Amino acid sequence: MMDKRLLSLVPEAMRHVLATVGWQWFGLLANIALVWGVVDVLVSAAAQGMDAVVRNLPLIALALAGKVAASILSQRSSFRASERIKFVLREKIYRKLMRLGPSYTEHVATAEVVQVSVEGTEQLETYFGQFLPQLFYAVAAPLTLFVVVLPLSWQAAVVLLVFVPLIPLTIMMVQKIAARLLSKYWDQYTQLGDGFLENLQGLTTLKVYGADAARHERMNADAEHFRVITMKVLRMQLNSIVIMDAVALGGAAAGIGVALFQWADGALPWASFLLIVLLSAEFFLPMRTLGSFFHIAMNGMAASKKIFRLLAAPEPPARTAEARPGDAVTLDHVSFGYDDERTVLHDVSLSVPRTGLVAVVGASGSGKSTVAHLMAGGSERYRGDVLIGANQVRDISEDSLARHMTTVRIGSYLFAGTVRSNLAMANPQAGDEQMWAALDSAALSDFLRGQQGLDTPIDDEGANLSGGQRQRLALARALLHDSDLYVFDEATSNIDVESEERIMDVVAALAQVKAVVVISHRLANVVGADCIHVLEQGRLVGSGTHEQLLDSCSAYERLWSSQRALEQYRGGDRHEAR
Ligand SMILES: Nc1ncnc2c1ncn2[C@@H]1O[C@H](COP(=O)(O)OP(=O)(O)OP(=O)(O)O)[C@@H](O)[C@H]1O
Image 1: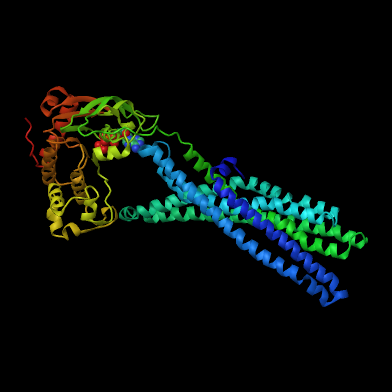
Image 2: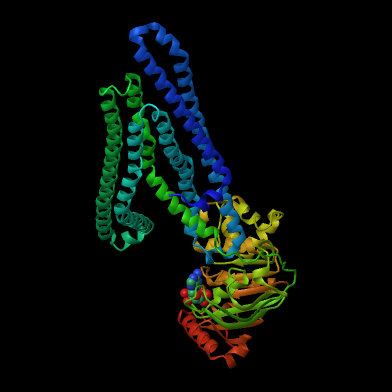
């Protein structure tokens, strides 16, 4: 329930945890003083009347004030501990992710990062704010009370103390039995959550195919399984509370029983007996509260395991190299796989000179986007060399890579705001004229003139635009970004052929002064490229101009013929082969 690594992770929080325990302990002392005063009043009132009350009044008032102050101050310290832990842990996770860099997904899944930094830290917040102080206090309180009761009756003190550890022991036994049930419960919980989200996201598709009723039935069945297991867990938790209470009350009763016998025998004065009766419940209350925090501890330990796994992920060396203007990009004998099971690129060598249009073509799944992924520094695990100038791409800082290279993919992100705000992020200095020129190049200006121009509102992820309009806006934004290398990865795939040709003319003009890589499954887009690289199942099977490849590369020839046949069939024989 306590991990040393966890305590050393946030030493500042431990200061507040100890302060919380200190104030709780002070509250206990105030309570003992209060009980002492009340017992003295009860015992002496018959003989001394109001004198007994007056004599004890300052002690009782002071003890009450002490109890209230201790409660406020311990809550404040507990809040500080929670606050520190959240702040420090989130900062540690953030810095770790920064050190892992853009290829962090190779070490940890994004979903896990989100889970760990949001839910995980919140679970540890309650672990440090509530469980940990209670754990220390639950040990300190019975020992303190033992010292107080010992001079009154050592027999009662020993009996009370012996019963205290029985509470955590019973809880641990119950938890052991419950562990399997809990793990089943969590499996079903996440399964139900995943299924619900998937069904919600795919609701339109389910409706279209009339499959919603069947899904509904399945969801109902899953929900029923979850209800049953939830009830089992609740029953188990209630049972464990009953057992805990039985041990706590049994312990208090045993202690009081021993004291009662001693009093009946005349071995214990009435005042001492009363004190033992009033303090005996205090022996067990802290441990009993700790028992009800066990689920916090279990969640906290589970969260901390995930956090340690993330913080222990091996870090790549700091990226300090810089890409310089005009640096060419070279892939030299590069092999790569996203995981250890499958190699996606096999010994690929190609280069992108300082200016000119380079195309990467191939069938779906041949590895075209993976080439772009490696050029953009998306992975460090490649074998061979991916060089920008003389530096390995994995050594170049993210800032420098972002300045050097602009990548446009199908899913390039559009932010909620306006057309202007989306364009301005690529070039904050760009004026209206420059923005309109970029929109014109991306064949989007006609549409926007009919709307509110540059102030046309854009929803989250460009949800109020069509797929093609989103791509055009992303393209216009890329054209505004002044960099040395542009990578267009299927950037015109959703755009009608006429507009696509207009855009490709702009791309070709850009290639006169910059390095441009076009990844496209449509060969007609790249027939004019200075060099076309053909990929087949992750292998480079040909490089050259369109004409050279038609003569020398059968894979290219096959791709070209089949696409041409298809376009002719569609009545679109726009592209003259040689
Ligand atoms: N993130 C990823 N994790 C694991 N495997 C991946 C990932 N991305 C791509 N792959 C695999 O790598 C191979 C090459 O994919 P890639 O996207 O580079 O092909 P592509 O030629 O661009 O295909 P398309 O034209 O369909 O976009 C595919 O077999 C794919 O399954």
